[in-house]
Amino acid sequence: MDNASPNLSTVSEVALPASSAIPPDAFRMRVADSWTTRGPGPQDGLLLSEADRNSLSRIGIPLRIPTAGVPIYHAGDKARDVFLLLEGIVRVTHLTADGRRQVIAFHWPGDLFGMQEQGLYIHDAQTITACLVARLSVRDLKATFLEHPALQSHVLIKILSDLRETQHNTVTRSLPDATIALATFLLACTQHHELFDASQDLLTLPMPRSDIADYIGAAVETISRAFRALEHEGLIRRITPKTIKVDLERIRSRCAATAPLSPPP
Image 1: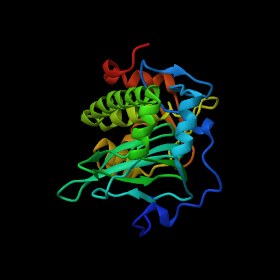
Image 2: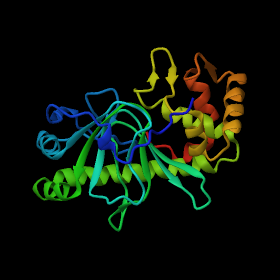
Image 3: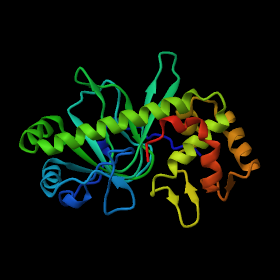
C-alpha cells in the first residue's frame, strides 16, 4: 500500500523535539564513484575531519521525523536551509504542468538535498521512512565554509558525485525495456546496506510500487509485470510484498546495458 502524505504544511508539525545536538560522529557524506574513500562503516563515503563534523554538529538542527509520507518542504517554499539525511530514506518529486508526478531522486543517509533556485525550493521532498535529518541554514553553512575550506571541498565532491549518479539515473529512465530498467533500479538499491542484507541476498524495498514507477517513468501495472518477468527469469524471488531475494550475479549481467556509466574500478 502506498504511503499517504498527511495533511501537513511543514515538517515542524510532526518532527519530534530533540533533547540534544546531533553527535559529530553521525555526520558523513555518501559518494558513489571514484572519489570514494573507504570509511569505517559498511558503505563508502567521504571521511570528514573531526573539525568538519564538529562544525556540522554545531550548526545542524536535528529533525527526527517518526513517520513516512511527511513533507519536508514543498516546491515554491522559501529556501533558507539545506538538509543532510542521517537516517532513513527521502524521495524528491516534481509535478509536471499536466499534473503527472515524477520521482526525481531517492535520498539515502549521507545525502544532501534541498535544491534551490532564486531563493525557492524547486521540488517537493517527503519521507519514505522514519528519518533523522540535519537542517543546515544556508547562511550558517556559508560561514562554516569560510572557517573550514576542506568542508566546502567535500561538499563540492558530493555534488559532483550526485551529478554522476543523476546521469546514470537518466540512462535508467531512458531504457525502452521496463524490465531492464527495474533490474537496474534493484541493483542500485543493493548498494545501500539499509535495504540489502548481503549475507542472505535479501532486498527490502520500503517505497511503494507507485514511487518506483514514477522514478522509472512507467505505469504501476508495467512495473508489476516487470517484477513478474524478473521472477520468471529467476533473477529475483519475492519473499513478502516488500522483500525479495536477489540473484546478484545474474541481475548484474542483466543490467550490462548501463555498464558504460558505471563507476570505474
